[in-house]
Length: 254
Image 1 (cartoon, rainbow, N blue to C red):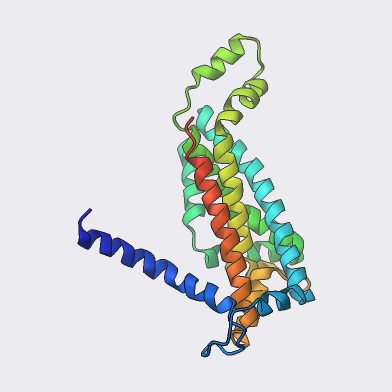
Image 2 (image 1 turned 90 degrees about the vertical axis):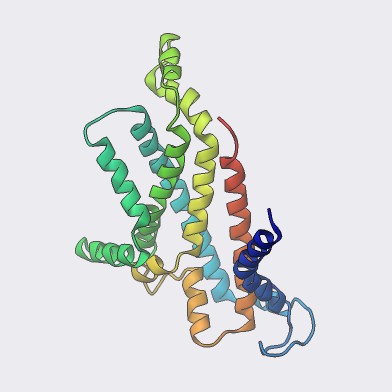
């Protein structure tokens, strides 16, 4: 690569990650004012640990993320296996619907889910939030697993059936082990999306159940507090770790 190309590449990465570096640095700044620098310390991280409302919101977010990622992975994997291994009328249509849901703006999904829950008289709270997160995580899992299985050799299932395995056993012992890296990557991606979601959660959660992204949003609206820098740094670190792990899982060859 030429020097100009290398400089351009570094410029792009600096544009993307320089704000994160500044955020990380100021999360250790013990000055209560963002415009001045005092000294390095853990003051704002200690205050995070002493905030009961923030801890409760964090636990709520982790619970919703774990449940929604797990359920979306089960449903999305089943859908991807069905789309890849079986031929049926409307197969391309259903695959297209997955892509539409994947690319739909979050605000459209949030408003539509809110209207649906109100029409079905489903109370807004933990249940509605969990259903909403499963809904927008499911397409990511299905597409991830589908991309892993699209070149799958169906003769492997036929061989397993010839050896006496039932259809369920063939899928469980042949297909799912081959798709396991994509299943794990889909779960990690779903967990990250659920943990970071603001727009959909804003519409479908109730006043009695607060999640971490909305808690952060309410804190920022009153002015940027130093605790927000520390909290955002922790979230960014967790998200980066999950994304890297999911990419490593997807990088494994069949």
